Image 1 (tube, helix red, strand yellow):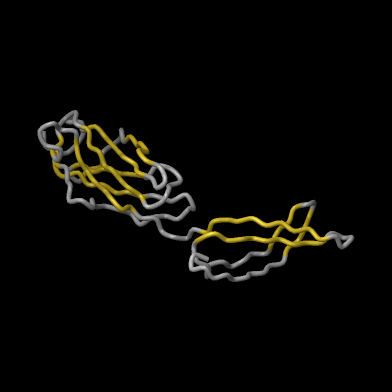
Image 2: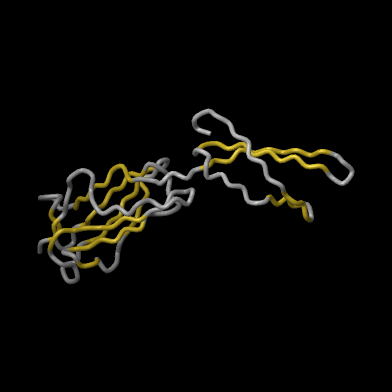
Length: 173
C-alpha cells in the first residue's frame, strides 16, 4: 500500500472454458496505491501456471482546488451584460471521467442552455464552463452555480457551489 506495508489477501476461483473467475475479495481495508495481483493455478495434469499484474486502487474522493468566476466584460470582469461570456474555471486534484456537470443560475433562475465545456489542462484536470449572457432570457442578479464531478476511478466528488478566490459575477442589463 502507499505506506510501504504489504498485505496478502487470498481468494479461491474457478476456471471455465479458459477464463479464471475469483470469488469476491474485500480490499476496502487497503490504502490507495498500486496493488500487485498474482494468480497461480495448475492444470488437470498438475502443470503450474502463474501470472501477475499491477493495478491502481483509488478510493479517494476527488476535490476541486480552485474555482473562479469571471466575465469577459472589458470594463469590469465581475459584471455581466447582454452578450458577455461568463466563465467558471475549475482545477481538480485528479483526472475526471468526463467534463464536470455545471448548472448556472442568473438571479436565482436556471440558465436554460448554451453551456460550453473545455478541458484546458490534463493530469490533473482543469476545466472551464462558459455561457453567453442573454438579455432576453437571463435574470438580473448574482450568478451562482453547482458543480458535480467524478474522477477517472469512478469516485464522485462533493458538489461545489462556491468560488475559492472571492470572485463573483452580477448580471445587470
